[in-house]
Amino acid sequence: MHVHVLTIFPELFGPFLATSLIGRGIAEERLVVEVHDLRDYAVDKHKSVDDEPYGGGGGMVMTAAPWIRAVRSLGGALPPTARRRRILLSPQGRRLDDAKVRQLAADYSHLILLCGRYEGIDERVRRTVVDEELSIGDYVLSGGELPAMVLIEALSRQIPGIVGLPDSVENDSFRRGLLDHPHYTRPRRVEGLEVPPVLLSGDHRRIAAWRRRKALEATLRKRPDLLARAELDDADRRLLEELRAELEATPGSGLENDVPEAPAEGLQRPGWRRNNTDPACHLGEDTSDESA
Ligand SMILES: C[S@@+](CC[C@H](N)C(=O)[O-])C[C@H]1O[C@@H](n2cnc3c(N)ncnc32)[C@H](O)[C@@H]1O
Image (tube, rainbow, N blue to C red):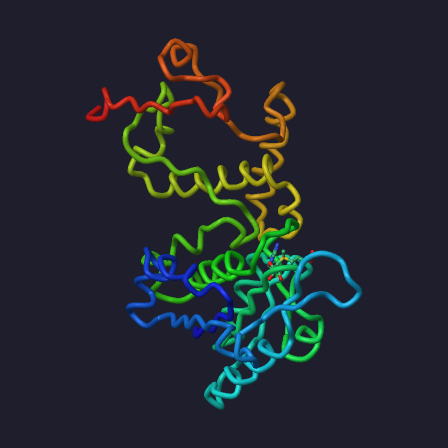
């Protein structure tokens, strides 16, 4: 996958592209990202890329000419075999989701990402050199750079070899229409909460069954809307019936956020707050039984 980014703030991408899985993917040439300064395509000697809006009102609008020149120049330089997509990051676009990320990764070899600023980009850019508008959510940011990074990072997880263990991508939330199961690591006991014993059993069949059940439960509790399109077999459907019955039979278990209750002893311990969204909450670790 080869990604071209057009922005007036190329410096925002430096640490992002040099760090963690993306940094390694780029070093190993599994992913190529070229960040271009839109001002290099400005047509006047001041390198201006914005102007006042026709019709008046506040703010500035990005002018069409630099964008059209830049996108045509980058597009014209792609190899003839390139499967190209020109994407405008915009709060007005289709909302990005896992299916869209996978479709882009599968269908295109080259992406050109347009990161707007100010009030946005002159509408004629969208109409002449854009194939698709994508949004990262129903809120407005000041620029398209963070949305472009979100898209690049999500795409990178679809590129073979960037995430070391293919299973982690396969089990990611949304992949088969379900949320991921909960994860635990050392120590065995944190704030009085124990790791579920099955995860210590070494029995891979039981562990897989537990993880499937917990993925179904997490989806039922947090995102029941996903279940209508999830890949479920008969055993899953039976489990869901059981889980629904359990939820209904347990007062207060609700379909709201799945935050475990503090055990009584935990309440006595310094640092514990029942409401763990409290910023004062310090999640202390209990390592006393780590060797147990
Ligand atoms: C301040 S916004 C312009 C918003 C525009 N006036 C509107 O309300 O539709 C400037 C730029 O940020 C980017 N942007 C802002 N929010 C975004 C979102 N949710 N998803 C993708 N891009 C976004 C777009 O590139 C946009 O051109």
